Length: 277
Image (cartoon, rainbow, N blue to C red; front, side, top):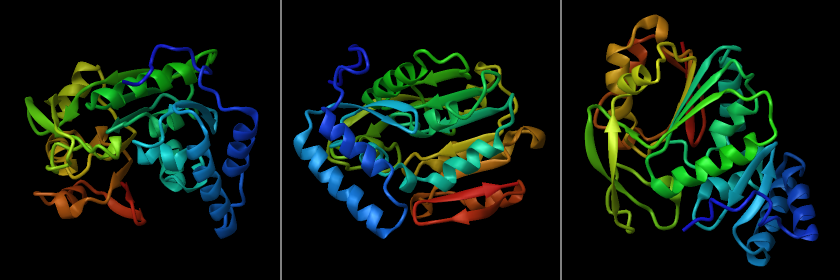
């Protein structure tokens, strides 16, 4: 079980490992910098006692590294972890705006937005996988500590689906972020999770207008967004959506539904697409 009770800093890396980590995070943003950071990552994971309490771009995280690809990438090369996508979302949210993170994992997107939003903003982060949710909570509290200008934040242990139900969340033993209600046979069993439609969750939170949304739920994006796109009022839809490229797993024409509501694919890379309207 993850340690979510000890104060941040208990697992701080030693001086030489911390210095290597800093060098990797600030390496030149080119091929040589990438190779250097990857080498540092190998040395760090082999030498450090895990978990490790790490600061990345002002975000405090208790990283376990070996069971979460997102941590493994972001901790050493934040400039290569969805930098464009994260910047697009931050620019799309006004001072009093709302950001929704569906599939928050341990909080990289959530905390990037929190550290780039004023206290007048609001974040709703949804993560149904229990260990990921606990690590999300820890990272949020660790980053928030001592910070005065912090947006309102709601952390919700639900999955987003097309109806109120209980579904099996299929776990991936090698990657915490690959758990899915859509993709089966991940090899590490299942947990039963509460699912609710996005509009119902927003209503419970007293939220009508969403300014930006990120969704990465391993092939269940259509289940989560189709009802929302069909029923949400036009003026309440987000101007920017970042979505994982999982079209091969979708059972509905989510791209077509996005187009009907005025979205177009502004940026597309190997991992994600940025939709705007």
